[in-house]
Length: 136
Image (cartoon, rainbow, N blue to C red; front, side, top):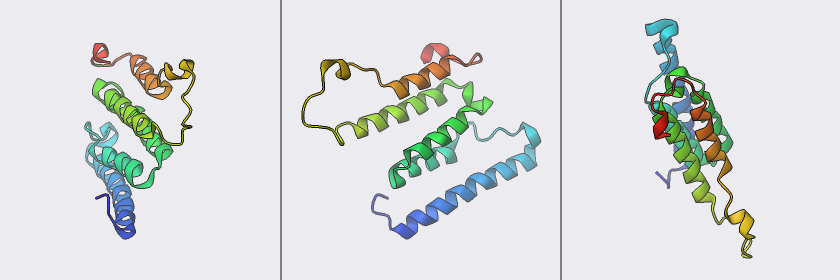
């Protein structure tokens, strides 16, 4: 809810962290070292959305993405990388026009490739076991 109170946001903060930790504990208890997390990373996506939308904590949200990218289960899945890429592109689009000068930028700057989203696709293509590299 965009109009959520500070108390609700604080409750979500602690609840999401507790839920992520509980899933990890229960997964390891049930499956041992074979547990790699949720293949759809549902709670993690909610946490990333919460950090991005409610706190504007972009760097912390990126840390969550990077932590997820280290998990073999997700690193081999093209859809994970495309989701990460789209998050960065949406972020870039939402920041477009904020804090900019009214003077137009020189043409060289207008044609620049979005470096952070492009680096995500490059990372994806470096994964040797990527399940559908053509899609990336």
